[in-house]
Structure formats: C-alpha cells, structure tokens
Image 1 (cartoon, one colour):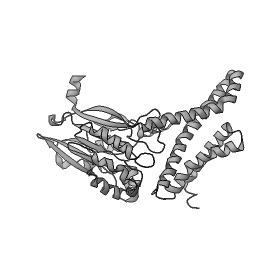
Image 2 (spheres, one colour):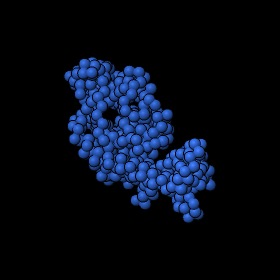
Image 3 (cartoon, one colour):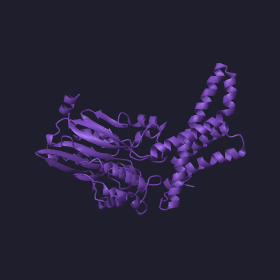
Image 4 (cartoon, one colour):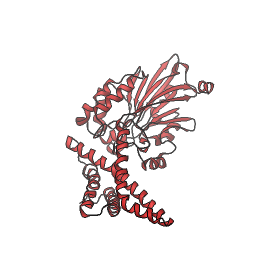
Length: 385
C-alpha cells in the first residue's frame, strides 16, 4: 500500500489515466479497442511501479526485456497523444471555419491517420537512435591557451546508457569511431550505464579498447549513481580508465599547464549522504596558472565551475530532449546550456546531446553524437575568422 501511495507513482498514475481516457475516447470505437489501448499505458506504468518505487533490481534478461517494451510503449504513446491533439486541433479549425466536408473526412479517417502517423514517427525515431552517433567537430577558443596545447583533441562520450536498449554492438561502434580520431584525451562525462555491473559488464567491455595519447577519463552521472556507483567506479578502473571524484589531472608541456578536473554527480549524495560535486577541489588551485577544464555531468553546475576558475566545462545529461515535446521541456529547464556550445561569463560550456539514448530509444529532431573537441587559442581563432 505504501508503494501505491508514493507521491511520484500517484502523479504518474494520474497522468497516464488522463492520457488513456483521452485517446480511448477519441480513437477507440469498441471495448476490445479500449482494452488494447490500455495495455501500452499499463506497460509504461509497470516499470516505475516495480523497479523505481518498488526498488527491484533489473538483473535478468526478462527484466531488461520488460524495460525495453515499456520504453517502446512510452515513445509510441508520446506520438499517439501528440497526433491525437493535432487531429483535434484540425477538427476545431474546420468546425470554426464551417468546413463541413473536412469535418466529415477527419471524423472518418482521423483515427487511422493518427495511428499511422504515430507508428511512422516511432519508426523514424528508432532508426535515428539506432543508426548510431554522428561525429560532431567543435573548435573551442580558450584565452591564454599555452602554445604547447594548441590543437589538443578531446573526444567526448556522454550518456551512452548501456542497458535495456543499448548493448555491446552499439558500444563497439562508438569505440571504433573514437579510436579513429587519434585523440589526446577521451572523456566519458557520465550516465554510461543503466544497470548493475553483474549484468552489464559484458556490454561495457569494449570500452576497455578506447585509445588516447594521454588517458581515458570517466566521471559519474546520475544514472551511474543509481546503478551502484561504488562497483562501477572499481569496474571502470579495471577497464583502464582514470576515474575523477572531485579530483584532477595535471598535464604539463613545454612549461604550459592544463588542469583536467572531474566532479561527482549530485545524485551520489542520495546513496552517500554528504557526498556531492566540488568544483573548487577539482580546480586544483595549488597547481597555479593553467588552463582549466571541468568534466561535470550536469550542466547546471556551470555557475560553480565558473566561480572555481574553469575555462571550459564539458557536460551531458540533457540528451537535447531526444524528441518533441521533451526538447522544449529540456530547453526550459537547462537554457542556455541545453546542447552544443554556450558561454557563462568568460567560461565556455559544451553540452553533448548524448551518445546513446535513455528510456525510449527514439530521436526525433535531435541526434546522438560523438564529439571531437579541438582546443585553440582565442587569438588564433580571431585570425582565422
């Protein structure tokens, strides 16, 4: 009973019930059709009820299959509701305009068009997600960049979300793309996994093949914390990665210095009270004058990074919204650091739109990305523009 009365689950149940009542009223013409429509809504409800609120671990293939089906239903219902609303909006316009023939046509074929459009949008979104990340090249001008670090190449992998819908094959593709770029650094900026080490170790194994001239670095995202931060920290270290937990690495070339800091995600404090991101520690003020880059999964940490003296923050977390209307919701929550390059005072912020997907394996209006960041001096950038 306590689980059923959980505020989150009550809210979710109310939203799903309202959504079901609406589409069943508009699209279902028989009891059997209403029952058929109820099933995907129930599947969306089941995962949060059993795994999130019920705290059951996703440890078997059956668990992951249930998650995958639930996520597919979530993606399809998103489009179904949107196209139903669009169809009703057209009906309203037709009624206001006195277009009786259009009203009759929409009333007759509207539900068929809505179903066809929703399945079509889901198929397009699945294709965009599963065809893999596109390479995005970004030059970042940094004031005071030492000449020895001019052209430093950083590959950023973020929000891979290995789990119910992303496995070893997708990970191998990402690794092959990264290794072909001959990067100085490879950074994994959180949310790499969605599940326990015991289940996902074979699927993340290709990450051990990542190559960089200097090193491969990992920081925690919120989903890594939900999946067992302690075990994953140890596991990623066994894969040859440097894990930064409010720590830094110092690189020196010909008298120039570059500090690469990494902070934990705020979600770590849920399981380990008192633990949280400390950009002030990761900035390594004791290192003296240097160009400073912060790896912080959540872009909302940017003000603290700027205060700590960083020149650039690399983040993920937003997925750029993945698909409409969540693209709008993310923009409202995280603007101006939603995706791509933005500024906060003198500090640059780059937000990777996600190398994988979370929840519905769907991209519509956004693309998964693997980012190649090249550092250049601000003066050099001005000369070339």
